[in-house]
Length: 321
Image (cartoon, rainbow, N blue to C red; front, side, top):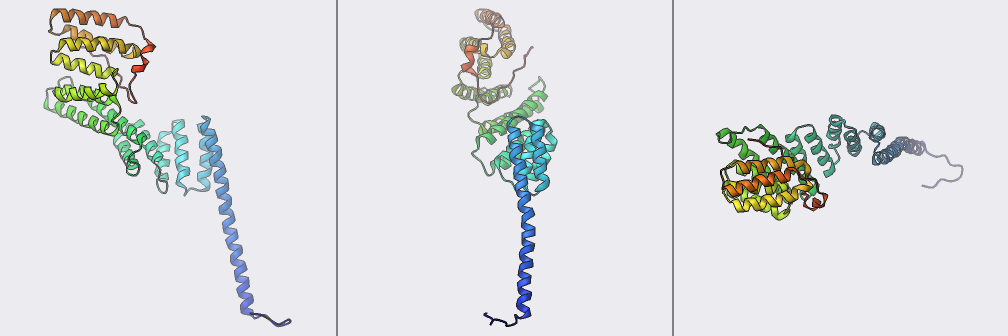
């Protein structure tokens, strides 16, 4: 609409113009603080990342806390704060922050951290639930699968720790079978880790399944020919089946490999002493006893490091009978 010079502008147009100016001012007043909060929060986060990368967990947490106070609705900031809390050892606070982060932040690292925190806190069920949530949208992620295998191994070891030496009881057999089932799940999650199959072989021997144990040992040794636990499990299997030549061959191979694992030498010596005390031909009995004495005097040999196994290594306890 055009107006002649000197003509009066209608009141409705003036009112509409004023309303538009006021609305623009209100929008500006609203957007400026939001933009300022976003900017300040991003600065806190950047500084927090810088500090955490340099190992300053507490200082980083303070920066992330400032970002969360400015924008509590941003799930990623809660995740970053949880990382800092976990770094400083505040595990419960880290779990709480991850609970808030899940509202709008979807990343496999969140569920990986949550699973590891629950595992550290001794809650395997919650750890597995968190890792499974991560695997629901990142099924091929190796870190999640490996972490899940670790939780399952811990669960199996806890079952084994609870079972008594009398593995003939029905209740004990049921517990051992449960441990075997858990380890099979762990192997399905991390099929490239030979230590899982070595532990599975030991459990299967206890349940009276030498054929399945032999399959697990074979798989483990194919993955890592120098896997100490697998060699010991194979040694037990040969003793069970009275295959003394093969048992002696495996014992001699293990005696070489064990030099890279000085912490496992006492357990291996105990195994050899048990072999020497069994009802077996005298020549084998003497050779096992001599090998036990030789290994007991062995010094660590770092040249055998090439035999070291994969991600998970189970510390074998010294066994006596």
